[in-house]
Length: 162
Ligand code: RP5
Image 1 (cartoon, rainbow, N blue to C red):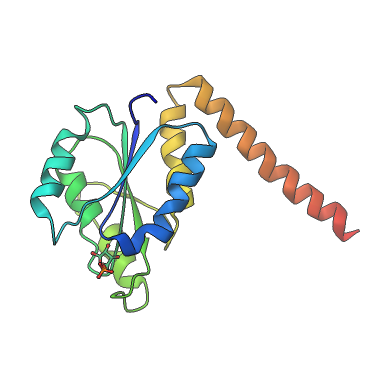
Image 2: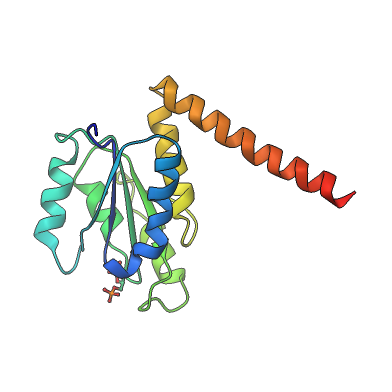
């Protein structure tokens, strides 16, 4: 197994059912990844260490998921020059999901987090693969095949309706 290119992190094990979708699509697209739990509030030093060493360890993109007062993606972005994709999670401590979305989305100027939809870990995985695919033709080809399969599914459902 080669060096992971994408780091998937989440604030709690309770985020895993959502964040697993990022891992699944990265696997399907042939992108090496690692997955672990890093809590901004409960393990702040671990977060600092993860973010500061991510680039040096060879990661190219970080996907960070959290719910409620979701500070993990933004704080990680503040500590690295790697692109950070944020996944708002509708967690048990989230009122209705908007708290997670806005905590991740409304970043101050200079510290971007590319925020996907609520529980949108699958798209986070695809977006990370697209960033890698901009420089690696093999991954770009896998993405093109994936998007072709989406098109074929729709066209099949059109035919099934007839
Ligand atoms: C956030 O609080 C985590 O990312 C999770 O979405 C939420 C709830 O965490 P647990 O109380 O389930 O560990 O920091």
